[in-house]
Image (cartoon, rainbow, N blue to C red; front, side, top):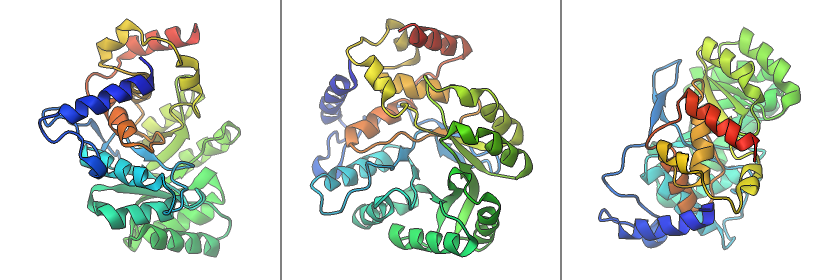
Length: 310
């Protein structure tokens, strides 16, 4: 079953749910007796965070007048109403923060969201100005996680973020990268700094982070947020037209996206994963990866062996 086929069926099933089903323009809902979304602790605090989030790069860079914008509104409403919380964004993602601000103005639910954004510039004042712009665009007075994006001017911005944390404008501190040529420096920063979160790219066909970054994060007590879990779409391209292997039922997978996400979540260092999500049915499908069984070490190896021989 392809992702599109699965999602068409999921939409029909959602419509049949006794607990509300499809909510029309208000979004979608799953059955009231569905298992709760898996949560994992943020090591520095013990706060429990749902393991499936939403990434906003590219897909949330729409003008509010765009005909597709209403789908983004329904997507976040569906995500937050069905157990999701983590939303990752950045001032460098075009209009994404403005889009999120408008969505929260329309649906409320800011109290349900765990908002992560970034500073992605050079210089102290530029970083401060950038963050103030993020608060304005998001329509909030604080964010839950503030990260140095792609470890750009890291020392300067970490000082700023710590001050903002003390002022109550950011709750957690982190760094990000999605570029392998920065991994050595990324690791050095992780070893010398006390961080709540690290964010890094990791997928079934992109496992370099397993070598040193993920084990180091676990040793250092840092939450790990995974970006690009679908490999910028490469995984879906390779799986297109292929049947999901029968053994995927052993980990309660009904579609490829769930298999890809469950593989990432099975790594013991991973706290949460943030797939780009711009349709309500995608939100439900992704959240389903946080329900049911997660692969054990044996199953992870089986998934890798299967994928590598395709």
